[in-house]
Image 1 (tube, one colour):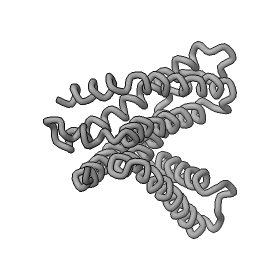
Image 2 (cartoon, helix red, strand yellow):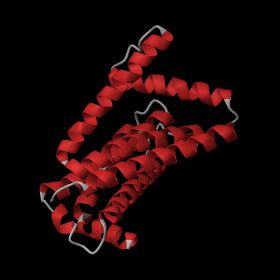
Image 3 (spheres, helix red, strand yellow):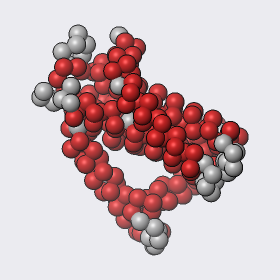
Length: 229
């Protein structure tokens, strides 16, 4: 049933999907020649692709099609599973296209081999997990309002990270809230990686990402079951 729900979503939104992917590739064609590092390129591409998954949810909310979707002979849990899995497939597909573009684009400043380093892939997976696990539950439950809740939550999370940084290090990053929060988080991950052997670190990191995705999925199921249509 899950694959049927995915096929249904992709067939019904195929024109919107093609337009979204086209816009994404145009931006990546511009950025791939100006990226200062492979890591910057991949993280930007991952975060951008993650936010683009919103388009499909907001489109359904705009046309008030969620009530019709819930009349199908499937549970709301099945619908949430399909949307989470579909979001990850969408992000993975866009990232694959971005890497292919980086490999063939004239004047590309990104070496694909450097992008595929484990540390870079892990940071990209962390960025995607953070966006999807926090964003999708609220987008599925509240639509456009959920996006606003997500953005406010991100601001609060960034502020909390900065406060922790000030008290633990005695100084605040010179960048803004979100960039500063990412700076502190990256420094913490680097310190943790240096204290553990690579196999142990990546195993722990993979388990942590799986756990965060599962918690985001469970939150989405709980919220969606309480949504009145």
